[in-house]
Length: 389
Image (cartoon, rainbow, N blue to C red; front, side, top):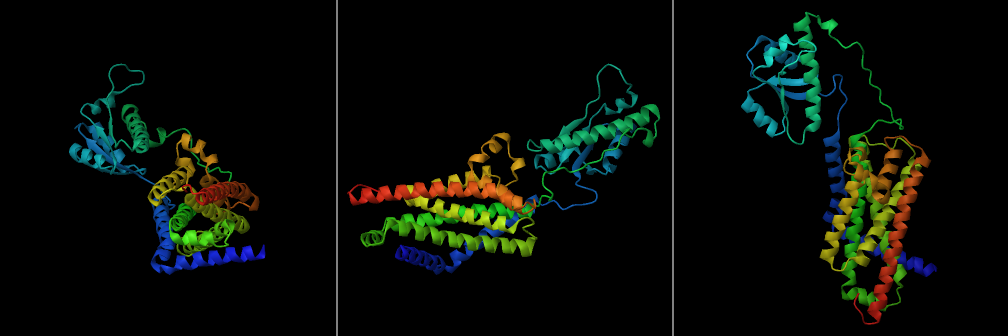
């Protein structure tokens, strides 16, 4: 038994040295996830500001009346908007390029100054121009325009003062969450990109083993007294060792450069990291066991890994995903790993908050490893009997 362990470690050491043989490729294995994590973090990072975000708004005035002019001035001065007045043609161009939302005060808008509650007849129309993908911004603009125009209408129609048209209530916003920490985009992106590239590293390790299985060196190794279990364990250990180093490097850069911290249980973080590294090793072995040709294995693996990362909430926070995507997350190890890592980082969770995710990821890793071992054993048996692998 002891000699088998020594043999597995020797094979793992061989793969470890092969990994470092190409220094540039090894460096990219650590640089790429850091760069992607930084990019995703910067995209979703929203720095806190006293005034809050403002809506980019274009104001088009086609009615030459005094009331339309006053309403336009109110919109231009609104503290909730970054507004400017443009022509209709310029508004169409900017909206088409998704630069802003435009509000058009068309001819006939000035009739609104004579509005009375309960009055019938046709009502003046305000036109909102928005990009098809900017429905949220359109709704925001609709609320701002409705509030501003109704205030102006009340002042003009009834001679009311600004204080008299203010809402009879105050709005007080309070953030309520089951987690004491505040969401941090850089922490989310470093967790997500680390998990994604652990799986990609597992895929690359599996492709290397698949390549070895198709070469004479594999046949010579299998013709010797090296048990298949030692080969599998050695490959898994080498893959997991590189994965552990990848976690350390990525989160170290995140800590020093972007303030990514484990605010919760560090032991829980280590447990989740080990489970994720085991999942990467099991993924690699499964790729080698089921891959067939290298090109086919690469394409299919990329498809499954990217799909699991996207639906698992590794790219964007899970609450931004549609309902159907969130409903399948319990079947994805990436989602469990992401929940656990977020629990012990920005959510400031304790050790037990990491246990469900670690157990789920470890269970997936064990299942994939068992499937890969069975498939490799059957392939070896078929090869010895003269069949195809």
